[in-house]
Structure formats: structure tokens, C-alpha cells
Amino acid sequence: MAGSPARPRPPVEPFKIKVVEAIPSPSREERELALERAGYNLFNLRSEEVRIDLLTDSGTAAMSDRQWAGLMLGDESYAGSRNFTRFEATVKRLTGFPHVLPTHQGRAAENLLFSNTCRPGSIVPNNMHFDTTQAHVRHAGATPMNVAIREAYDTSSEHPFKGNVDLGRLAELLEKEGPETVPLVMVTLTNNTGGGQPVSLENLTEVARLASSFEIPLYLDMCRWAENAYFIRAREPGHGAKSITAIGRAMFDLAEGATMSAKKDGLVNIGGFVATRNSRLADRLRESLILFEGFPTYGGLARRDLEAMAIGLEEGADLAYLEYRVGQVRYLSELLANAGVPFLRPPGGHGIYLDARRFLPHLRAEELPGQALVVELYREGGVRTVEVGEIMFAGTAGTPEGVEPLELVRLAIPRRVYTSSHIEYVADTVAAVFARAASVRGMRMVERPERLPHFTARFAPIGSAPTPPAVAP
Ligand SMILES: *Cc1c(COP(=O)(O)O)cnc(C)c1O
Image (cartoon, rainbow, N blue to C red; front, side):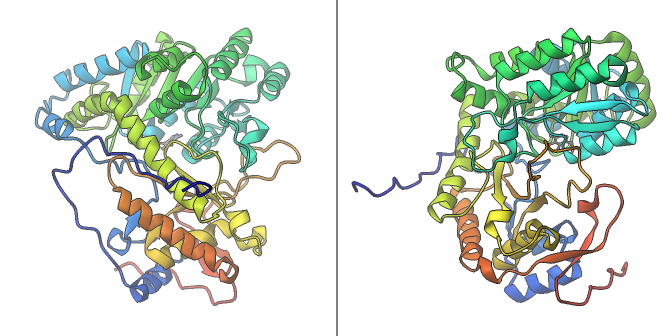
């Protein structure tokens, strides 16, 4: 064995399987037809056309027996449901934020927060805006500004906290604009757009200190707070003996509030919330909540969903679960590294992000290497992934000078859904495309919607006639 690399080993799942769901196995011919029908946008595929679905880790988790049992405890009272009481107590205990408003998902929380804090001309800094966050900042008339450290843009840097904020750039921005223009500073835990990379507690502490010196509140996008806390525990000196909830609390103590899509670390298929310490803001959020989502004790959800969310938030902070969760992503990274595949280092918390530029170096930026790779992974093995690059972030929130924006393909791993052999199948599929990468053709966009274009755009392979739009049945 001496000299040969250690064989990657998958983590042992800390659960056994009680219910199974068959997965489809479309033929090569069916996949080709599906691609044409979908306008080469994998958001347009039907799920029965997909073998392994790594489009997103959002709302795709497998719920536990306890969560399913919790659904049966649904008290569907319009006001004052006991499920809300439990949900509210759980969020308060985890975060310490006294005002908790449930929403149907993360972007609804973003809408409430930004529409009540921003005005036309405002600027919102964030390590890196997620797509819906950026769209909601803009929807409120404000300008999103990305202020992640430079290492975040270097896919081969092994920096342990590539989600960190560039404190110099943030200070410069706050000095120039002040609290009149910057209503809040936001930090995304983990940095989804930049590869699921964590933010260190040290960096977050400095951001909070800086923001408070300008009397600007700090808000967290806490979708993947537990994965972020796991990385702090594993990588940041002095935190190795702490619990995930203690580290979580140390992060939340620095902020005035947070938005969360519980479809991520909340281990539910739908749900989210916005929480704050600011009572005056909470009153305004509550009014908007009633206008757009529902009464404050359900916020656009069935009450049983609140019960599942309360249980899921706790299960998502379990250390054995997180070791498996992050371990499964690491396992995929090790298999891909053995095949020589270029991806964003180090592996993130919720997925692997292939470096499309290095994967397909023969394609120019306008040939959309990310989308070309997404299409090819589906064509090869029925694996559905998503482009995180030129298309998702067209006209984006600003990269530091002299730095090329990222062009990635995200393989997001749903929580508790796929086994180690599924992960191996994915690695084999990626390796097969990598082996014939030079033959992969570029793509062009033939229909470009104005907002959030990646969801509905249509594409065509370069050198072919555009597919006509799908006719409604
Ligand atoms: C998913 C996500 C959101 C939006 O949440 P939805 O539930 O999809 O509306 C916001 N920020 C980040 C970082 C996310 O990953």
C-alpha cells in the first residue's frame, strides 16, 4: 500500500432507511429528447427524466420519522396554534432572537426584511449574495454589493474560511456611504454562491464590530448555519470542544437578526423565517407578513409544517448528522480528486462546485462553459446540476478589481437522500465527461428573461438552430 493514495471511504450513515422511493433511469435517447424539449435548461426537466438530482439541496431533504410523526400533531388553528409555540421556542432557543416570524420560504423572509429596511439608492453589502437575495435587494430599489475576500474567487486556494468578508473593502464602503445609505450589513452562512464555504467566528466578530462602529445592524443569512458552525468547530482554533448550538449561539449573538430558508439546515421541504431583536422593525415585518404571507402564527405555512420545522432545526444541529453530511460531500470530493477533476477547493458544506473554466478550457466565456457542463453531465448520466456563474449572476453584484468572476457547476447534495453508491455513480459520471471534455460544445442563450434568468432561460448548442419554445399542453 505504501505510496498509493488512501482509498476514499464514505461516512457511515447515522440512520437506516424506512421508506424508499424508486428513482427513474431514462435511456440515452430519452435524455437527448428531454434536453431538446427543455431548451437545454435543466430547470425545465420533469423529475422522471432525472436519475440523480443534484439541482439543489433546498427543500429536497428526507424528513425523519420524528418529523413525519410531527406532521400528525398539526394543530391547524388559524391563530395561536401550539405548533407555532413550539417552533417559536425552538428558534428563540437556538438563536436568541426574541421576534420570530415564520415565512413559507427564505425569499419571503428576504422580501420582508429588504422591503422594510432599504429604499431606492440603498446599498447592501454581503460576503456574496445568493441569487434570490440579490434579486430581492434590487426589488427593494437597493444595490447589492459583494465583499468576500479575494481567496473566495480563487478556486484552488485552500483557505479554510473562504466565506469570510474582506474587512478592508467593507470598511471602505461603510466609511464612504455611512448608515444613511447602508441600512444593514448581511453575511451569508455558508457562502452558497462561493462554493458552500464557511465564515470564521473571528471574521464574523470583526464584521459585527465594524458594522456597529457605524451603527449599522448586522443580519445573517442563516440558511446553512449548522454546516457553518460545524466548520468552525473543525477548523477554527479554540472551538473543537464546543457544541454546534453553542457555536451557533456565538454567531447569532453578534447579529441583530437573520433570515432563514429552513429548506436547507432546517431539514424540511418547505418553510423559513425572519427573526430580529429590533422591536420596531419586528412590528413592520409583522404587518408585511400579514399582507403577503399570512397571520404571524403560521406565515404562509400549514401549522404541521411548523412542527416539522421545529424538529428539523434541532436534527440539523446534531453533530453525528453533520459529520455524515459534510463527510458525504468530502467523499465525493475525494473521488473526483482521484479522477483529476477540477473543482472549487476545499469541498463545501452542501456540495461540490466544479470549476467549469478549468474543466472546459477550450470554451470561451460567451460559450457558457458552466451551462455546457450542466448539459453534458445530464446527457452522460442523467445527473441534474446547476450553473452558478455567468447566467445565474448576469450583471452581478461586483467582483474585486482584477478578479475573474466564478464560473461553477454546483453538485448540491440533498440531505439524507442519496447513498454512497449514488455518490460513486455521480463521481463516475463526472469523470466520464472529464475524459472526453475536449469534445464538449458550447451553449448560447436563445431566450433571456430579465430577472433570475437561470430559472427560465432557453439555450441551444452552438452551431445548431434554436429549439422552438415548448407549446403549452
Ligand atoms: C436557498 C437560499 C435562499 C432563499 O431561500 P428559498 O427558500 O429558496 O426562498 C437565500 N439564501 C441562501 C444562501 C440560500 O441558499
